[in-house]
Image (cartoon, rainbow, N blue to C red; front, side):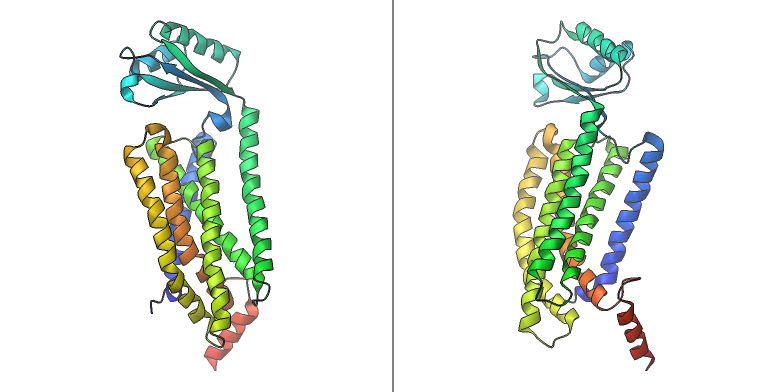
Length: 319
């Protein structure tokens, strides 16, 4: 039988390294830009103009030059849809009336080339801040609900609270890893965190918790089935029994997302990439983080937790 749980220290070390690197990157971003990663207009506020030039006549360099001529240097220009259609999304920071006047002047210059202005959207900083608070609140509520559900569902198993806490640890692990990926992509690729990033994050949170519950439910069944067997062996057996289910389920989703990444449009590529990485880390955490945390807790290996267990183990080794 594979010994997955027995190698838990290696899994913890890998996750710790990734999360620490992510925290360093986010810290650097906060010092240089004021936020852990690039934030889109959805959070900081701003204006979004989607222009359809209807054919050749403008490219990114020309559009950017027009805006810079009017003093708008902090803009993001992206191609939308098929490049041959010459559709461009222009995002500008929301600042003051003077900035908005400069944007309108630049758009007036582009008007002869612009056959149709397909979308105009303005978001205030207050709306962006509310979106961020709602996302944090959603994660917090999820943590409370998951813990309560675990305690209720595992009430006949010793130390039921540990299952809820371990699931939350795995969930936070996934959130931190995704934030680390976004921080790195912001620095290297210029990605911006928008509402789609939050959508992917919350989707991964739900997926991670669901996959963890499946593993924990098998542990609960095996505790009764293999009564008297060491807890570490029961957890390891449960992981092996559910491993094929987890991998088979995720491979179907991975193939679909890989196809979208390769052949999908640029407007959804960042969202699918974040979701793809999130599904990977969600699968990893449900197998290599959540259940090993249970075993580490039971054996008294977690600092400042279960001190009596650690003391008894130390006395047993000394004897």
